[in-house]
Image 1 (cartoon, rainbow, N blue to C red):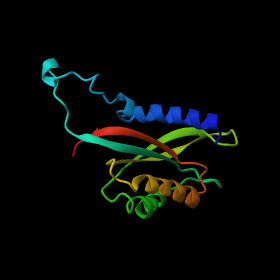
Image 2: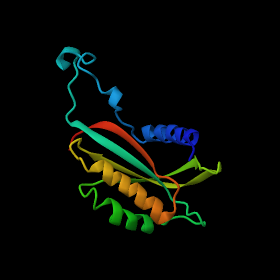
Image 3: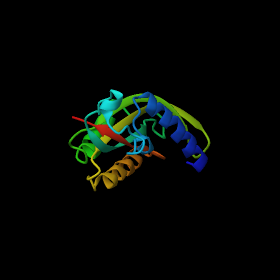
Image 4: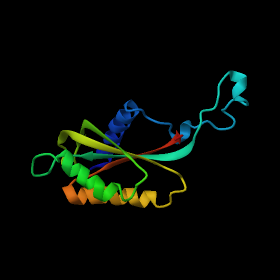
Length: 156
């Protein structure tokens, strides 16, 4: 995928992610100077939670030789590649999207999105996420798996 194609795909998927609920970008987290000195002074109460990382992975499901990955095939993949790396949980979303491949052809396809939130202290998360991307590309002959990262305030 060319740099321009990746940038365009990233912009499209980022817009789609915001439509799915979005998140707080790291630059959008208020700093001490931007936050009111006391929430009570403005009638606001601080929301509960702490800052965690959020990663979304976008998986195309069209097979290079034709056809589409079935839900059962994707579930088998998540059982093998995602669950062992993130046993505390993740969310799987199904959608439709498009992207321009390195050959310049625009493909429209069903897609799967995996959303994982994890604490900053999880030192293995980045490596595990990259392994998931590599495993999927290899298993299903995919050119790319889009990754987006943000910071979220989470509370359980």
